[in-house]
Amino acid sequence: MKSKRFNFRVTDTMDALIRKKAADAGMSITDYIILCAIDKKVINYDGLRELTTQVKKLGNNVNQLLILSRQGRINTVNLTAAQEELKSIYELLAKQLSRR
Image 1: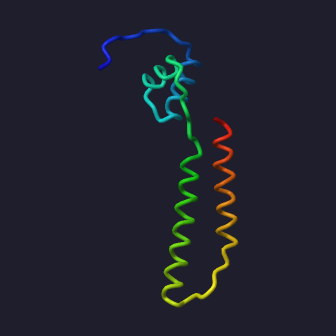
Image 2: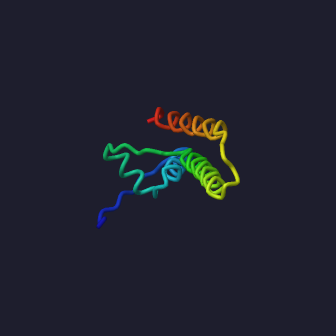
Image 3: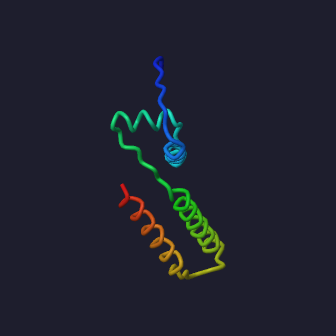
């Protein structure tokens, strides 16, 4: 349980920056400042929502192809589009991880 209180002053610019960084990290301002102060690494996974959306769409597409195949409505599948999507997902993930 937190029982101690810190009070300090910051400029409007600092306030906006701290609030933005805490929001980007999905954390409260208190938790963000504490982690920064005790030298813990704060990781912001911006772009993760976009990556998750792409993976879900790709999964849906593969599931639809599987259903059509089981119904006998298709025999062969051109997975070029799926390969391109996987490539873009890989590139986005590599970009995010290289920022860490």
